[in-house]
Image 1 (cartoon, rainbow, N blue to C red):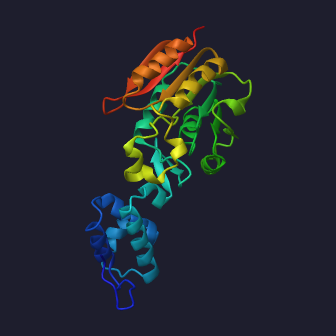
Image 2: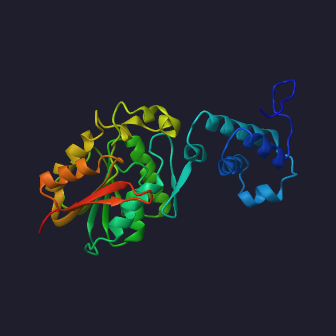
Image 3: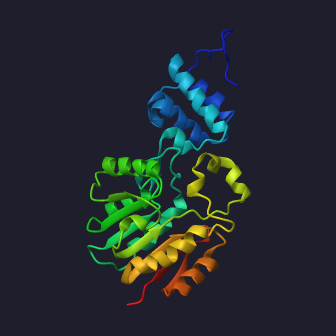
Length: 285
């Protein structure tokens, strides 16, 4: 613990001293630095250039509160209020999942598809909007809709949309594809809930602080995907694609669901760790 005065408030410390006290409690040096930058309103270069500067009491208290919250397991992205995804910063809070690096595979696969220049695309279960908004930024001609059952999550996505200047992305609240009515799409992408309800990992680490509804989906984690696949078939144009992110041990089950629904060219794609992370299929012409 950092030194305290007899009144219980932190004793004045230099930047270097505060960082060292925090690093003794947090194992990740980068996380410590980022939390310090958040508390002090600076960048990492400033931290190292001003190591001998005294930190004012309020800034030190902010830093200590952030460190304490991180020790309790709160995600760094929630403490910082943002997370980088595909080269862009997205605001996050406790209402949305923190964007994961493995989800960038979904973007890579999508951008390699041969779709019309003005393709109609929907991101189902958009959360922070990182998928829909990244696709909108990378493919300016695409007409993109994002859906989410959580109005709170959609508010975060809308804020990210406005901040990134991607006003053409439509945000609609509702369950899966229900809010898009009878629209037909060239591409449906989704990173849906896919963790089993009783998976012990839901009680460990950062995920304890993320919305359970966005993570868990029935006894085997496939409850939402079982609904999404046939719904997607009905909403896709002929020649349109469905891409779904799923759990590390669910690829065979998801492939079977797509094939049973009538999809062709069904394939599971490996992430950088060699895990089958995304499955795709095309509605035949």
